[in-house]
Length: 240
Image 1 (cartoon, rainbow, N blue to C red):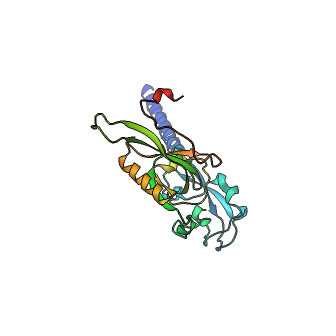
Image 2 (image 1 turned 120 degrees about the vertical axis):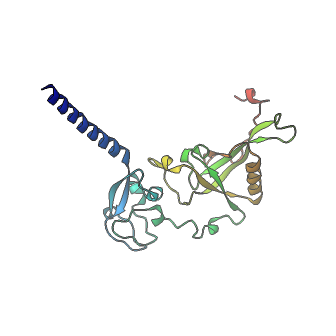
Image 3 (image 1 turned 90 degrees about the vertical axis):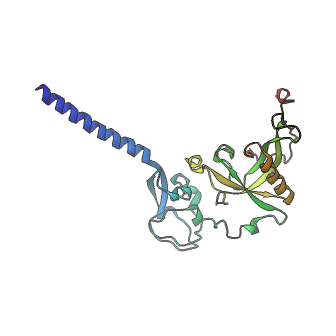
């Protein structure tokens, strides 16, 4: 009797372990909910709510996570015209409603400006809150010339203020940040609109900076120029 009880207990614990494992796997995979088309549409047709349905996919689903439209953004895309044909079952992608990055991207530039891309991470790029159309300051920590490496004067300075962001990664549409966007960002590039001299200044700073350049998000209605002193140990305690 005792042996049977132990056997039944062991079987019960084994089944419980399987159930708990399946729950754990399911909870870690069911991460994102996107939109897909219930019927085919032609280029130029408007996206209506009735042609879309929700679909949940695992977090490790693949490259579609970088382009697919989140279900909670449905109201934002409904009414927009398609840039290409779609088939039944296709995921709704941001590229369906925005031109590809290489389509007339150069014509979107101010005729006196240039486009320069810099590498950013979630930490240096304001946790993914920088969008195409945002304005940012660029901050660098630089070793000033003179002296030995051991006694170099280190200072932090804002090298450019309120520059326009043209693109983030391979997208230049005004994309909403929602849900797990920051999880998807990782390391990417931010393309900035600069004058030719500003391009040289950023590249020079990249070469001499102690660590990566950092972006600081700016309110688009703020003043274009703010007087900011160079930060060093000499005035560190004076700044409040």
